[in-house]
Image (cartoon, rainbow over all chains, first blue to last red; front, side):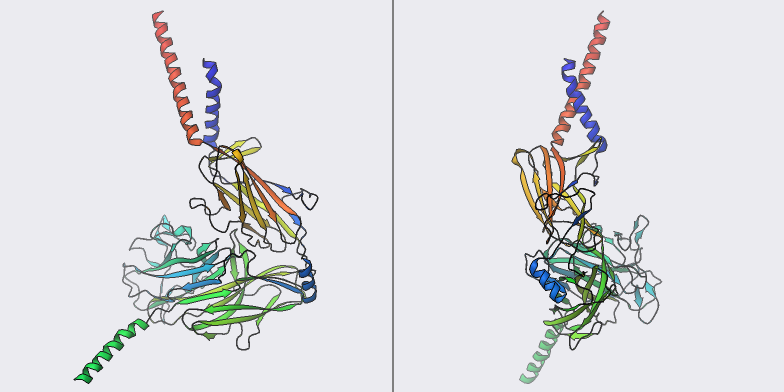
Length: 242
Length: 329
């Protein structure tokens, strides 16, 4: 009786031991193989993962290229919708109001995109830190709550403490960068004066119409901050993905 | 008395109307075409027209051209604010120059007639640029963030003396995103729990000199005649970069963000995913194959638990009865 069931037990135990030990969502590139063309080409040489394809122009295109010296393909190869790449900002001057110490000011605007192509990016950076008019006083870029909640230009973190000072932003919306997914997660702006690259704040790899992202600017000042009007220019660039 | 009432009503009317005209200044811009791909010989020039439409408020704008390089595998880029490479740009408009400000009213079209010229010594290969319409930021005396909005269209230039653009493509990654992996000697088995969608990742690498837009079709076959197909968007794979190929819209809300396509799985058993990659202008094709298993993981866990419980109980019963039997003897 024991022998009768022993194979079943061994199989089940082995299965769970093997599967249980290595379970992970690890992605490797070892599980594919490339088979070179056999139709229309008589096969190919499977010498490596690189594959040289002889690409030639069609007859009409070749004639045009030889006579004019160029060929232009406008738009995208794969187009199902017929609207241009569109970008809007609801308000180009965001008034942060009278800034009071330990009392954050949060003001928002929206960014809307229509794209028929392979998605889009919206990047942002600031010209300078928030700077007092006719002065060199600045409100520093936020580092969020600090400690384990320290944010960077490309990674948002929690900023809900009224004792954490600075200037930053967060984005909400279907295409907002995933690090903003949690409430009260902010980032500082990359700065042109610090030679920092612009950061992607809204992105998608899909075509879409009326994709809206809401950008909230937040400023919180320390009690010793010099009085006056502080300003910066935010450089926002939108482009279709290629 | 009548005149005074009329005057008062007019003043009130004007005061009520005035605030409604003080709306926030907005930017509404669009561009057509959003991208051009140009194959050009060295020492050649051409004109390309871009139409920018201003549906927002009047403002001051300018045209600029900047270079970029591909970054990541989802069509990202690193922008270089200067113009790199052997391509020269100028505007042929009578009234506009690159980097020179001009005013644009609401519902007005700003046409950029861009002259593109390659130098005689231009090296064969790809060069990537953007034409940018820049909206100047408004003036403010308040504590504020003011926006400089920029809208760009892509200009992908391939320089070739004879019109031939050899491709050097490879599949950088092709597999299903598994729930479990089972490592066996020389082979890895990818396992999905029954009922979970199969999310496939297909990434193509371009190590050649020129960009390409491959046509990719996925074909999934499984048990009991399971047969599904998906056509991926022929995005451009720029020279020296990788690109994740995707469907036009996400086919599954719960699937990983960066996957190429997702398929509902059916019966338990082994599935095969075939990728067929075609290039415009080439007779040859690239193929890829990956496999995975769909198994009733929850059911197997329950059965396994019952077997384990049963076997432990059996051993305990056997041990207890043996002990009791031994005492009787």
